[in-house]
Amino acid sequence: MINYCIVGMGVRGLSMYAEDMVAQYQDVARLTGVCDINPGRVRYAQQILGPDIRGFTDFDTMLNEVPCDVVIVVTKDSTHADFIVRALHRGKDVITEKPMTMAADQCRQILKAEQETGHSVRVTFNYRYAPYKTEVKRLLRTGIVGDVHSVEFRWYLDTAHGADYFRRWHARKENSGGLLVHKASHHFDLINWWLDREPEEVVAMGSRQYYQPQQHPGHGSRCTRCGVAEQCEFYFDLDRDPLLHALYRENESYDHYYRDGCVFSETTDIEDTMSLLIRYPDRIQVTYALTAATPFEGWQVAFNGSLGRLEAFEGEAMVLEDDVRDFARRSDGKTRRAHDWRTVAAETPTSPDHLECRFYPLFGGVKTFSVPNVEEAHGGGDRRLKDDLFRGVAEDPLGHAANSRAGAMALLVGVAANQSMAEHRFVSIDELLPAETLASVPATHG
Ligand SMILES: NC(=O)c1ccc[n+]([C@@H]2O[C@H](COP(=O)([O-])OP(=O)(O)OC[C@H]3O[C@@H](n4cnc5c(N)ncnc54)[C@H](O)[C@@H]3O)[C@@H](O)[C@H]2O)c1
Image 1 (cartoon, rainbow, N blue to C red):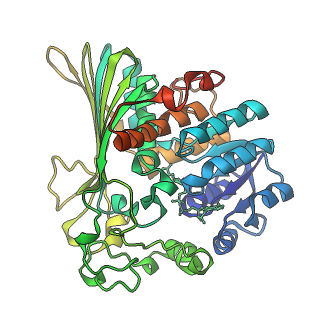
Image 2: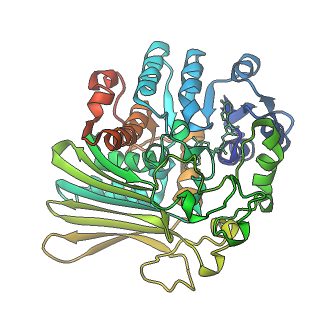
Image 3: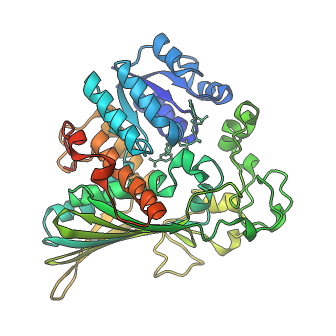
């Protein structure tokens, strides 16, 4: 039996890890303590998890007082590095949410702490585990496209999910590194993993095109008591969702963390529209774009190679016209249906039974590979990741498990992109984190 402590009792810490550990994995994982800077959220978590789970507002006190082999870090991104390094030096292994951290110097500190302590970091890249994304990896592994020449990758965040990043701490780069670090580190990890390669250099453009204060003149700093709530497509009633109410509304007095911040805030400094060009070894060119204000949610990728082109597409959500003034319904898992928005009428979204990868040989024809559409969190990635984390797997032929090196390589693309935007130049990964720094950590692309 392995003892775990979790730091960070927001939605992710509680729903993804803590609740399942006590309900689904109790035969292999013992949750001994939870910690959050907000005492109200700690108390709420204890009510949900039961009296055996100790609650703390101080990380070191938690590690002093309860047995712990592994620390799970699920706090806001800017605090990850500190908790990871402290846990390693306390003789613990670490599981951390993405992004592993937000900056190159913090990557160095984490790698150094791993070397000094002999303990290790796992990064929870759940998207790798989703069956559809795994199928892309499997197909590339077979060599179906031959030598890969270029990759086209597009990710679309809609006016529910995308907007949510502009409501709270994510909207400031000092907290999240912007969407290129916070969100796109998922996507950069997928590219690294799919290609079995690490990125070399990056050039980027980015700007905030949509979430601008002038979209709603007269808006308040949050939806609660906002003067333009009636007219706003993004008005969010925090009290309608029982979980958000209990975790955030009820505990605002402790830390003034307002979960319903205005998406058009004057203090936002992150981009909503970003384009990158990334060079990989073997002269592979990757174009990547992330847009955070689109009518649909989803992604598409294509690999062009010496033998043909492999395409994957997933429409993750479709917002209905009726919900234009209802942010809660737009965000609701029951109303947000997975849907191929390219082909089906918007009024009747239906989830596909299967998702397809299509291979177009260079000189004609098409081969289709389909996998069942898994309508679970993150395309089925969350459940499979947890099974691997807590129960382990006998074999990992495609290299799903991600270590600190994979964590670094994913987030450094975002860091390089931010630097490229600021300095208008190509930024190499090696100038951020020299290759020799990574020498002791194996690449885990599978
Ligand atoms: N892999 C995924 O798909 C996925 C999905 C959602 C969130 N996440 C990650 O999970 C993390 C948490 O996200 P969230 O949506 O739950 O955020 P959140 O803001 O809802 O929760 C974060 C919690 O951390 C606490 N916290 C902040 N600073 C702290 C500190 N110094 N000490 C102790 N506690 C502190 C906050 O009080 C809050 O309860 C983020 O890193 C995010 O990137 C990953």
